[in-house]
Length: 285
Image (cartoon, rainbow, N blue to C red; front, side):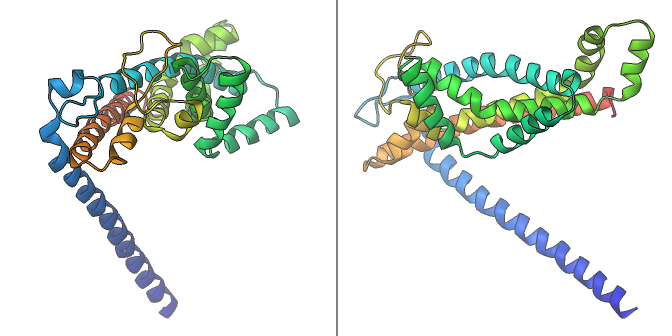
C-alpha cells in the first residue's frame, strides 16, 4: 500500500514537473516572439518586401532574400519529393528483406540525425567543385535535398505501413497488379501522411543556413536570381548579415525578416496540420 501511494505521488510530481517545463519553454518562446514583433512589425511594408539590399537600413529590403528562399524551396521540392517518395515506396514494397535492406535502413536512420553542416561540406565537394555548379541555386537546392531526403523516405515508409493490409489484399483479389495496387490504393490512402512529412521536411530546409553558407550563399546579392545557375542569398543569410551589423536600423530589419520567415514556416506547418486532420476524418487508420 505504501509503495502504491509513493508511486502515485511520483506520478503527480512528474506530471506537474512536465507542466512546469512545458510552460517555461512556451513563456520563453513567447517573450522572444513578442520582442521580435515589437521591433520588426512596423518595418514590414511593400517597400521592405520589394527593395534590394542597401548599406542604409531605411532603404534595405529583402527582395533578393525572399525570392532566393522561394527558388530554393521550389527546386528542393522538385528534387527531393520524387526521389524521396520513390525510394520510400521501393524500400517498403519492392526491396527484399536481407542484409542489404537492413544496411540501407540503418544508414537512412543515421542520416536523418547527421548535422546539417556535414551535408554542406558534402554539397561543397560534390556539387560545387566536382560537378562544377558553383555557388548557385542548383547547388544549394541539391544540398538541401540531400538533407531532407531521409526525412521524406522515413515519412513515406511509415505512411505506407499505416495502410491496412486488407486494402492490398482486396486489390490483389480483384486481379490488380502490384503497381496498380500501390498507385491506385496504397499511395492515395497514405497521401495525407506523406504530404505532411514532405511539408515538415521542406519547412526545415527553408530555415537551414549552415549548409548554404558552406555551399556559397552570399550575404549580399544586388540582383534577383532568374535561373538555377545564378548566385543567391536566402532569408536566414540576410538575417545573419543584418544582425552582425552595429546599426540599430539593421536590427529592426532583421526582426522584420524573421517575422516574414516565421510566417512562411507557420504557414507550411498549418497546411500540414490541416491535411493530416482532414485525412484522419476520411482514413481513421
